[in-house]
Image (tube, rainbow, N blue to C red; front, side, top):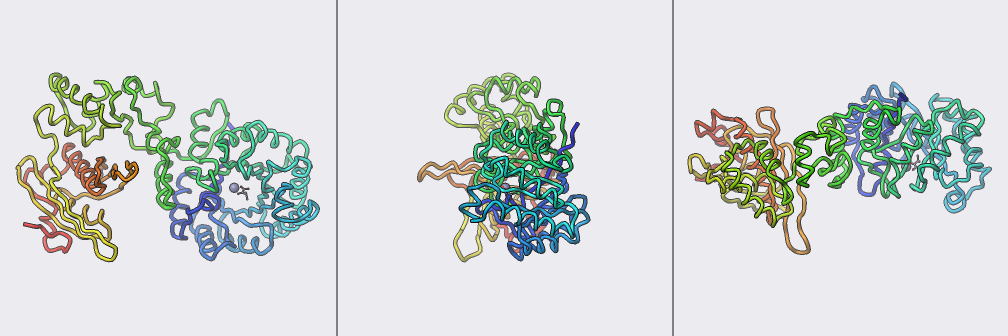
Length: 529
Ligand code: KIV
Ligand code: ZN
């Protein structure tokens, strides 16, 4: 097996995506997570570009162990000095310089002759080599550069001491065979070409970044440059998780492996998406919310018999919480029974029959049936209340300059009693969750919220998916409503009901206690009589 080194440039090339900018603190937090994920090389920023980036690269060089840190620079001495300084405390480092090689860039952007750029490239590599042994050089726009000149430039920088040659497909133009061909030929044609490491760096303008990177691996490349979620300029870069999982899933065919710890993939991608405020497309391979969800009845049936009937990877191996079944009008009895079982509800065969027909009728009117709706439907069908708590009402006061205030009324279906709670927060969600937490008979941590718009034109609507933690276990809840705050509140209560059904807080539930009983007097725990 060939070991492929993963060079992560989420914090440099990824951050070049419009609107993705990160603070130094965010970069440091993400760098630690990327190290945990198992990347081999980390390019944390562009030190000359801003004081914040310099500071981030320096702090990461000092704090993140076990990863080679790469200082990024244009082919000018000022940039190289900044990259050298920012990375000087790293235990293991390299400098990465780039210079355009294509005629389009030389004529329109640099306005320099080929002789001039070769001289510049020689100069800067020789300069950096005095300070650092590991030098990566990238001829920018390499795939639109004639091979004769490209190879001349590469030969020149190898002669000056470059140890890693990256051939970037800067504008995402190459096709897999063409890209692989460049790597095959460069090693044979260039003096010193067999003494250096080769790296692939692909952009995704034609959706070929992963395919091109895999082609490069088959042509002998040992390093691939990637970003988490494929973030980056325009259509982005080669996506780390797609490449790593393609190699993992097809390692026999590719005869390659990486050091990526797949169980950290999901957490890392969520952190990057949050920090950059980039939502993940539902159908994004590996990390998209639909990547391992199935709605078609035939698929659901197959999966419940054996997961590999319709899945080539196990999502749990990537740290992705299991929720493979999405119920809708195509779902069959087997899947519905499975899903309500997952929610902690057991129905007799007769109950199941009456539930099945009401489910089908309801599902015909919806895109999907959420857990919350499923429980309510099952409850109606069997004439039993399957949820411990029901949200009776919410009131939220929002505004631009004020603290947000919320109140919520919750009914305890077991005792039939209702109580109202109020709370404040910096935002309406915080205020609302503050109320709901008080109503629960056990301590609840609010872990995560995803909100999706279901609006068309002026019609409002949103879907909320919430994760809570209680007694060190996570529970999810989802709900849809025209009022997104009501959807959030219902999703939260759904997650709490799920926790109750699994036995969380059973003692407190039996005694009729609520979290508010422990917090009387706290300003956000005011029980409205
Ligand atoms: O896409 C590109 O060409 C780059 C290089 C500067 C490596 O990001
Ligand atoms: Zn790039």
